[in-house]
Amino acid sequence: QWSSCNIFSTQDHAAAAIAKAGIPVYAWKGETDEEYIWCIEQTIFFGDDNKPLNMILDD
Image 1 (cartoon, rainbow, N blue to C red):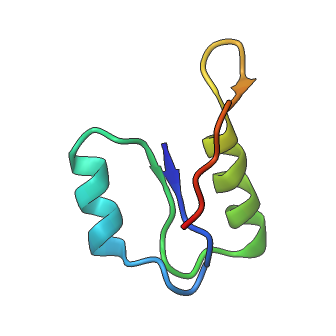
Image 2 (image 1 turned 45 degrees about the vertical axis):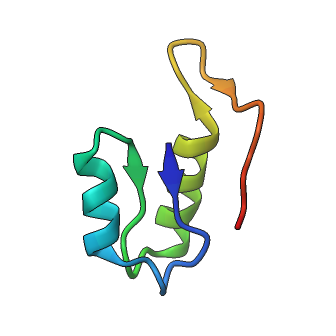
């Protein structure tokens, strides 16, 4: 799963390419603060059990 760390720098064409490869993407340029928090939550918690990730990679 993938989300952005900056609501102003997400490159929509790059996010679309990642999504096209079958990777869930929760990011778009110009997200509101509320949308950003939602996207992060979608990335961190997932699956039927809504379990948190066991690793986060931040470049």
